[in-house]
Length: 180
Image (cartoon, rainbow, N blue to C red; front, side, top):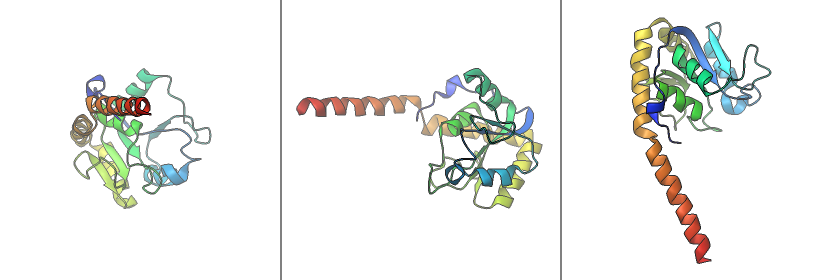
């Protein structure tokens, strides 16, 4: 994926809350790590956006502006994609990072999260719970890690590289088709 970081930004993190974004998170627990996320969130304030009829309080985002408002205002983003079934990142995670949100993530070898640099990542749930609480209680820490998350997306997932790779794939396919 490619993200134009300049279209995002504006992180404030003024709401002491955890944000999760995704569809059918509970139904796809094996892949999305919903149960693990519930263990991390426990009684902490959180919001879940997406089509999740079995998650109390979850709602669909009303559009891009609403989604951006939540990325910008919630304090921390939670990612629990499971390593054996999913990549360590998805579009929601990259968008959160592009805005400047700090990330809490379960360990996944393909994750762009570096522990203590642009968020916190671990297999140790007690550690992740502790880190989540620290981010909720320390807006300055959240902002500092979020700025590093934003730079990670700028450097590792630039839109220009995405477009260049897609153009190359399309051209290769056209040339291959014309040769046959």
